[in-house]
Length: 143
Image 1: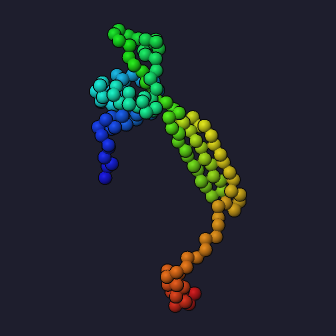
Image 2 (image 1 turned 90 degrees about the vertical axis):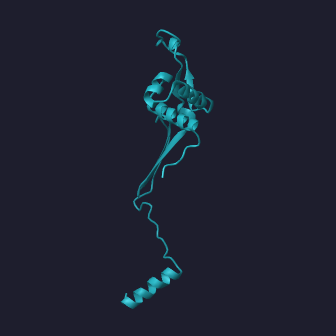
Image 3 (image 1 turned 180 degrees about the vertical axis):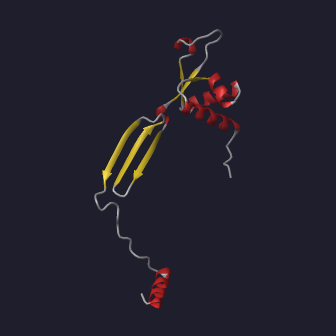
């Protein structure tokens, strides 16, 4: 069953954030074309995401040298330091962990070798009702 969103505004912000994760710097017009949201919805979502620290507002298109006729477009970009991603690769003989920013730049990594024995450890048999049943079954079967 799909999870319900808290509100339409939260859903719009999530849609714009998904767009920001996929591209570099973008304008509201580019976000509108990509997401299908209206200009006012995209701008409201961008303002919300800037206030929450997910996006940064860049210099306008005129300052960036992308100015065309009319009012210069506001530009936004994902703030890669707004969060991080942790990945762990745990194998039998080695464990590695990586921390990356939201753009995938690795910030830290740690690896350790578990040796030739690996992560093996003897697990003691379970005691209790199930254990007694298995034991009784084995003795019946002559094992």
